[in-house]
Length: 246
Image: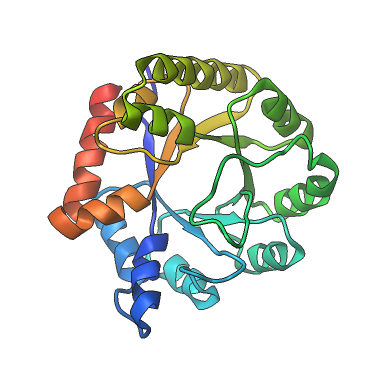
């Protein structure tokens, strides 16, 4: 029997809307409470270097507002490591970050950055923070995650999502095989595979059907759909589609 698939909801872009106008509305904490009330499995928040959406003070408020585990997306920097060690989220997902990018563009080069990642991963693990690496679904990056001792990887599904949107069925099939093969290899090596980036109502089910994937993290699309059908409705529909795929 295939295990249930968890849904982590990224609430960054509630904070993006708040910050566009200033003040306190809409409050990402309220979004976290809604996620909890409709059966979401976790909250994801990315504290960026430029603080373009989630702010430092949001983290403790989010943690206090619900019992859901917090997955803190963070760059591999001393500043973010200190913040993670202070707040002690359930998980820390190390992601690449460039100040000028609109959103995370591609996976972390865990192989190329291995030596600089070692002390960060070690300190997070010593603090009982579950480490995840946001990587491309390749053997080279998965091998790096294994050598680093990361218990979780999150595969970047952006290329799959772009191919799906473009109607490129050959590229969709290629990306699906790549992600599926790497999910199986990760699980075989004792690493829990997650996936996320660019997932929508239209494209989520093939990814959700990969039996080894334990969690999907979805944010921008759900917040966008919430404008039209409410956050409860958007999460509920995504949850239904994921469950049907399993």
